[in-house]
Image: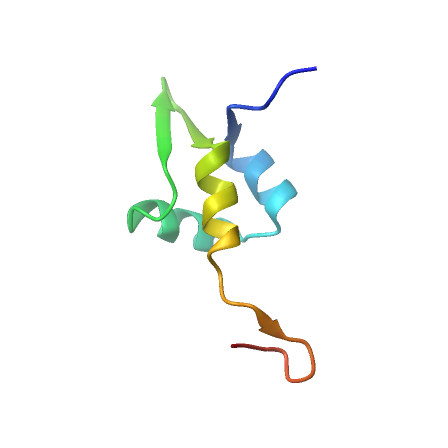
Length: 66
């Protein structure tokens, strides 16, 4: 088995639960590292993990971020 280096946009949306717009906004803001391979955008796996880990914790009782 091997570690995944990068995800396509579609794979990233599927595995992360992020929406397409949120993902592209984070890429545009420099919060998620992306690379271009021809016409394909690849999201660096470590960058995606770090972005999600850095999101605020949700208060399950209210549904809001802390």
